[in-house]
Every structure is written in structure tokens, then in C-alpha cells.
Length: 152
Image 1 (cartoon, rainbow, N blue to C red):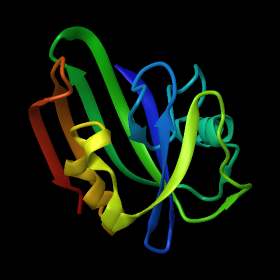
Image 2: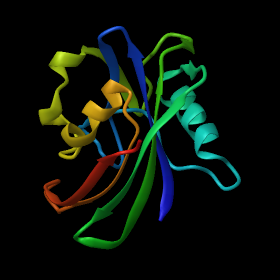
Image 3: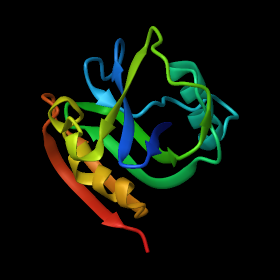
Image 4: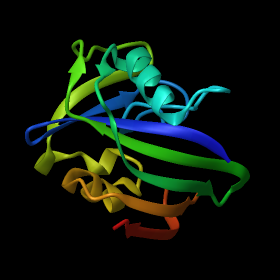
């Protein structure tokens, strides 16, 4: 299972999402992130990916959750995603070859153009409620199985 990261910038009642322009998840809104490099912590990976993908350095990112993702149609696929938020950062979000960032008011999050499972766990993140889960997606991004719980 590969360690991967997702990071979401939060400001007042807004969340920064980024449209994936190439590679895995192309055409979907998501947080920024990616695989941890060898010898790199997931926190270091989250900061590096944010810098590379939208030109921002998050300050004091907080780990809010983790989810083990599987794909029913690809037994070799396994991502352990560590999910962070940041409310302070250096730089202004900008578009890169990989991502196009955009601010959304929380009530207008475009769940229809995100991964199918995001609607299950993003509310925990937005409330600041730590969570843990295991999710399996099918070949058409449908939810095959889910275990999701708050961490107290």
C-alpha cells in the first residue's frame, strides 16, 4: 500500500479545491497531494505536493484523517491517504500543468465532479472531526464498500 497525501486549504466558509488536469484522477476536483517519496514523511510530502501543484506553502498543516483506498477492479491498487488541512499558507494559489485551483463556498462544493467517496468524509474534515476509513471503489468510481468512523 502506497502512502499518499491530500491537503485542503480552508479560509472562513471556503475550501480550495483543484481540478486535476492530467494523470490519476484527471477531470476531478480534489485536494492537492500525491505519493510520498522514499524517506519522506507524509507531512513533508503534503507540503511538497502543495508547493509543486499550486505554488503554496502550507503553514502548520493538521492531519485530520486517513483512508485506505482500494479499487475492486485492480487488486494491486492500494493507497493509504493521509488527509491534511491548513488555514495559513505562504503564496497565492496558482494554476500549474497538473492542477487548476479554485475556491468554493462550502455549501457549493461540486461533489458531482469529485471522487464518489468525497461526500462521505469531507464533512468530517470541514467540521474538524478526525476520522479513519477504508473505501473500495469500482471501475466507474462507484462505492463498493465503505467503513468510515470519527476518531475520538
